[in-house]
Length: 324
Image 1: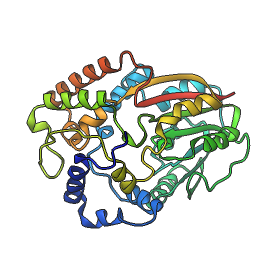
Image 2: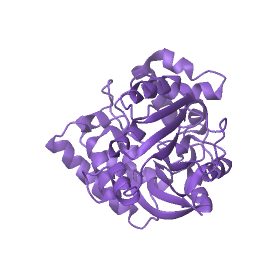
Image 3: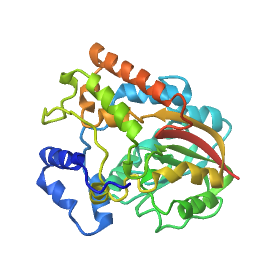
């Protein structure tokens, strides 16, 4: 049964006002759904509250994907899939500031990158950074996923990094993307594929709250306010829609839809089912390489690995696909 409002909504709203101020909150009251979505990302600097800023988390991702904590997936892709290729064309939907595609430039195999995003600030930053790579032609524009058309069989690589879960009308969009990929091209996924609208299961919430209570209190204080993170709640539908209408809008349909239109070359669990919930708003404690925080993270990794052992996928997945 759908929860429209939860206790966690009020806890989160109060915290967001404390951290980001009333102006940010007022932007969420705009009538336009697209304007509310843009306001989430149209900021100069994201606060250190998200689990993916933690270096140990990124190393764990590398280990889960490539088998080597020090090898990022762009290097893995280059070694395994692009070894004998050159002058490649890449499409990056919902590209943000362009940081993920720029990691592929070092391999000197990419000649053309096309990206789009709804955030003007992100696109401006992507265009600015692209100027540092004169050997590659970058084409960035402000647009949403459904306003553009793509030439058939144009791209060698299509990259989704934490972006596809923000796109609705999944089936029609994936159909369009599939046609634009060359027959021997690859689609790369590094994304959230869990519950729609972050509607966590009871099992997830119970396990996450148990882990949270095991963390020492000094490492459970929230960023900037020093208030204690006491409990993890399932977000209400109204808060999700008002805060960012694009967040996890059809996330649970990503893997089934990709399987419908693409052959799976490989898929790997990245994790995050528990850590995503536990570390939200307290991630700043774990950015520094300290013995105590590293031990806490090591314990969390082990507990989540046990939780995921018998599950076919995790909330965050890595995959490589080719068109059927």
